[in-house]
Length: 349
Image: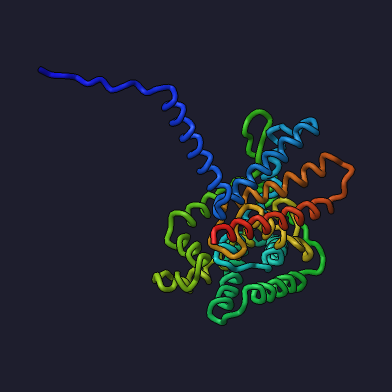
């Protein structure tokens, strides 16, 4: 005779207990994510951006318009590219103080070469090659000559800024038709919204950087060097080549950022981008990249740029505040995020 034993149906108490356990596990995962030195600062930056945007939309009429967001990218396309290059350097535990001066040098080279009649199709690649080579020299100084990144890039900053004055001591206007057409052309997105080619170029650079850092051996080595250079050497990773190349990447991004800045201003000027290197570092740090290296994301740096941009936008909408308040807010945010990084890394250790 077959006997079937009926299993008792789950009681309401057991179901409630399972639900409570699920909620506890979810909360533990959320807490672990926010307290992680890898993901925590990025999430805080994202929440900060959304909160500031909502606050702006509540206070100012027209702030929620789609073109306002697109203008953040249009106005800060060059800074996004600059922050991408800085992210590579800081991920290895380095720093690059020369990027602002290299941006200025790029604008001067573009303006002067176009003024002499060199076609834009030759000028743009030439400038990028020149600034990449300068970054390569800095990388060689840092790794093979054991010069501290602060000193090596400081020397490159003085060199690039000095070369600007060698080219010209005054502003040079850009009148090349092809360059101007590329600079002012708008790409319609529908609904009365549009972007410029600068935004397209910046987004392509961001996508390429994300793929490089997360899908290539070079990117994995960048993270490994930031986590511990000696350990990376023992693992057989190409540390020397990677440390040199990250400064070449920064030089490339600085040159391209200078070209995008030339699109924005249609001129070259020796005093362009003074202090921009600090804006780039601030954007990267606010975006969640640790100054000691090893942790960080390119998309976090983009968020950092957008946070700086939306603060500037709010000050513009307010109309009664000095633009220097932007620097005050950036300084406060930078201090806050450095403190957050120290707390999270200390908790991990």
